[in-house]
Image (spheres, rainbow, N blue to C red):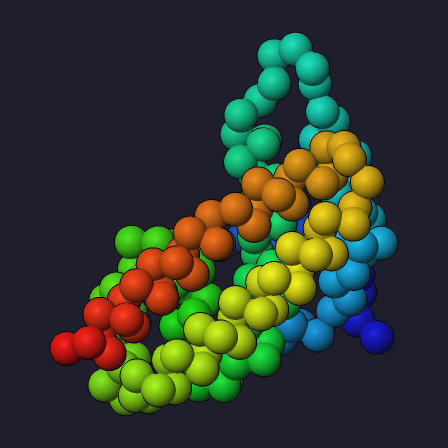
Length: 166
């Protein structure tokens, strides 16, 4: 088995190198509650939580770390040829409509509906796992990381609905 996400986070010096290392795993990493907690603990070892003078950039970084992992875990079931598009879409809400419109011409709207269903179900399973994490700062980072992904999937559904209608 490959390195854990916590080990990768501890080893890598910045968010970009962490992202590249996680992408290289192609979604093949444990992502259960204990794995999420270990990643959160590694994050807080590097960026200890402060109750006064909180560093908003460190909080955003924590959300970015969790989003990288969540996105890679939910797109692993997707067709390899479309993963890069979904990865880009799930990291930038502003790209949803143009990416989905372009993808619809090659993959078809029916395929997009199926992809949306797969992504939604995978995200729901991830949310269930996050819900099982004990209350605390680790859980908060994962909740923050997953929240905008729900919004992006909503935009995805709206876009394919518009494409289906007309």
